[in-house]
Length: 416
Image (cartoon, rainbow, N blue to C red):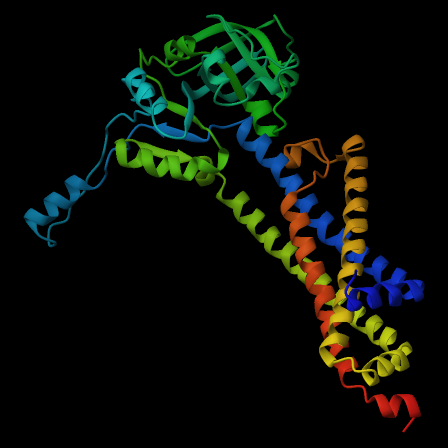
């Protein structure tokens, strides 16, 4: 047998279908907004991070330790005093490619907690030319099979696989290919400060980033070492973590174990992460504002609902119903409306997202790095919308319950 408060709440709602429908519809719209907006923004930035990080950079990068500067200056000043004027000129030839012993280091990295894969690479500046066209580019020497386990570059190529690069092969961006008017299996001239050679275009990739598509090229790791006269050395080691969000913890752990410069994707994309954090705060503010507006509207509707049922509530009070019983009835009505409105709002949101999955938004690939995106359901957005909608109905029922509890049965029934 149902408690009499629940029985009366369901009976009251069924007797006033238009009031109930209005409150359910208003709550459903509020839930739809509170689910859709954060899900859309979260999906967009998830796609952006996937393109910027997963397909274009390592989670963590191990670079050679930078040479400390200013030690000689400090030593001389300490011995000679501040009254001596020193003029120092560092004529040391700059070396950016001094990471040796990478095989042993890679083994240590692979055994570290949270590390999934490790790959070495060579990176340097070069000039590419064909005919009268000359471009300054960045050449990256990699082992495609090894490097593809760290950075998902395979998605940049037409067949979805990283090409196998021979000693004279090069893979270039499609914008570079357009500038040079070159196609696959044709040859281009590549020159570095140490060497110059003719190379065959093995593949053309499309990363989605303008700078990379026009200024980046891949060669085999051994080819890159010869082009930059590096011997057996490499520029750095790229590390992939088991989870993208573990990069900070892995960086901190490796920093204690290794005497190298360590950077992660969060360091390299600090501005993007700051932008995402700002958008999340704004989205949360919008959701809270929507909940407050909905609360005010629901409280107004509930007040009208009570005004139309004054005699019913007064008779209930005259029959011995307590003030707490009246509040319980109104809270139960709010709970029923909350369940129905939240389910309808979430269902509509899922339907809209399903439509977007089959008809994704188109955006500027050069600006955002992604050509299209669609809103994906986010559990956190649904949970937050459910909590805020519950608070909305709870506050509305509580406010209206206070007014109902103050009704004087004699005055309402007899008009005195």
